[in-house]
Image 1: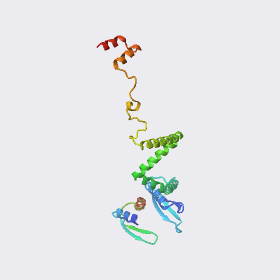
Image 2 (image 1 turned 135 degrees about the vertical axis):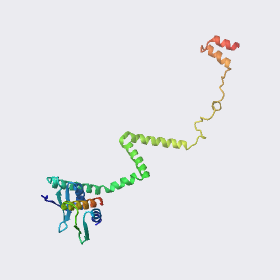
Image 3 (image 1 turned 90 degrees about the vertical axis):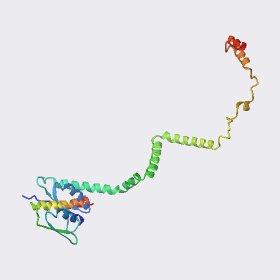
Image 4 (image 1 turned 45 degrees about the horizontal axis):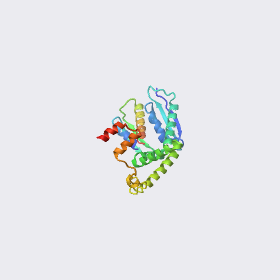
Length: 186
Length: 57
């Protein structure tokens, strides 16, 4: 006995033909499907005839749910198309991706910890100071680091002979007097 | 139309097809169907057209 087709009517203002086609494609293995427009063109009529060995019970509800699912997917895809295109554009453009990555990293670093904002400001200030000092050049030597000690302070007035230095150290009990005598006698 | 023509091309060994395009529809006349039961053949052909339309989106 041939099975009776189930007719499902969709409002074409709510469900696009693509959404209904998507649902149809999923049901091809379960039933034979025909699609047609209503006379006024405002509705799409899907006729489903269950295949041999397939129960027709619940087929209509499943088909309606699947069509709704495709319609929602389509709406989401349409709504996010611009963002998706931008993401693809960034992903396939390495220069833009790197620039965005750097910017994002900086934002994350500063937003994650409020103290890091202060720290960043201090670091920037320090860097500026270092740069301004570097711009003076090493030849200027404002602290006189490169000037020899003798030129800066002159020769020490009480500069002693090494033997006299040893004797003085012995007098102050800094070294053994016997050792000093041995050295001096040599 | 492309989906219908493509389906007819794939099913031509099982029947004779005559495709005509009218104002708002495509009419496919099928005879000499070399498949039993014929209802199943027609159902499979219809499903195949829908499949071709879906993959062409």
